[in-house]
Image 1: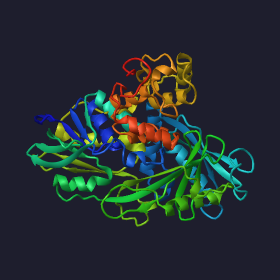
Image 2: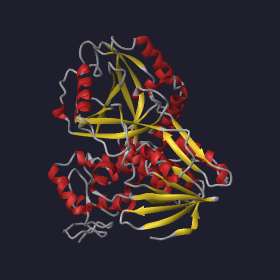
Image 3: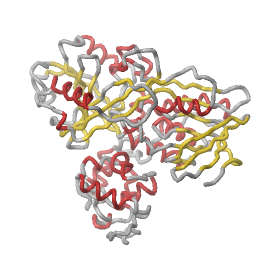
Image 4: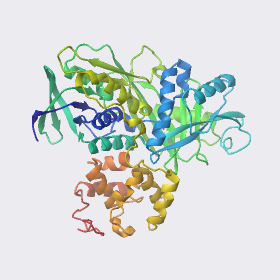
Length: 517
């Protein structure tokens, strides 16, 4: 690998989650030279294990986090405009549970929610009679009234990849499967050693380091050898389950638990309902986590408190879990720990700075990146100011909106069947033509591995979006794995390693543009 010892970059970012990629994007767009190192895949930890909401956090109002809610609601509008292909409005039904929060408290909270964040495009809250209408149909008779309010949903892992792609197209170097193994200050620069998956190492010289390692932020702080930080991280595991669709309609439900938690039930991938999340404190070093039987049973019980349909753990089609690196604020109750972010700058006079990111949520990643650049500006001395507020993410430049774009693509690619057409439009937006290339028929997409995942799309993901394993493709760049049979997933895994970035393998394919073996 190249040794960049003599070619310093302005910024070395450690961590390829939403915050790291957001900071790399912002910095590259201001003309800074950027290298980002991620020890796994982009969004392979916390950022692909969220509830996938772009929201203000209605329940945060109970903890008086008005600044966080206001900023989040403002960002909700910004992100809806920036990525209408992967972010879409979603109406939430909040049934009133007579034994929990009083109705007037919910009404007051929703009034604030509607007004403190500059809501412009989404419809306001309204009161519901759950005895009438589709919203109350799947619920138990005890729930007679409720509220409908607005938020938004996103494909979290794709948002991260698109931020990284935007950064790369603006000059950033994105290195996945690349671990920081050592770093030391040498006056006004850092000397950092990065190790790649093949064991090869390279030295990167950087004027500043951003530690956006998420759950591993404290491990990186120790590795950097900076002064004892004033901040610490609290790891909280959030688990989710995916069930066969529980109800008709495109609305979601916000369900209040008797323990003070909130559980969401959200339409997911057409045929399913996504349910989550839990809040379980985790002690010790971060690592892989999974939903436990106890957590799955808890989510099923919460659903059972509201829905007439019986829900049992054996119905779960898929589950996932992630560690949320929350900023430690002294709360013992994991549900009450702040979701706000804190940026800790270590910048001794005359030495290269290190900025560590604690906490945060996916909704605020763009604004967090702006704050990070404000803190780094005195040391790096760049002149360009904020720019991301009005800039679309790749594929998001749909001036007439998503529906009009999808209709136009349906006419242009009339050979693409539903639901593949809509899925591809959602995933790639205005860049759909880059995925399809010169294909003029379904046969020219190459082999269909199942559920509409073809050679041509996989080749694009390998070539452009850093997909290096079957899991990258099936569960992060897409959610096709959920729609495949076990045999189809196994067959895809077998062929993936031998597939080049042009789609060629030693298996016989059909198509053109390098897709025919």
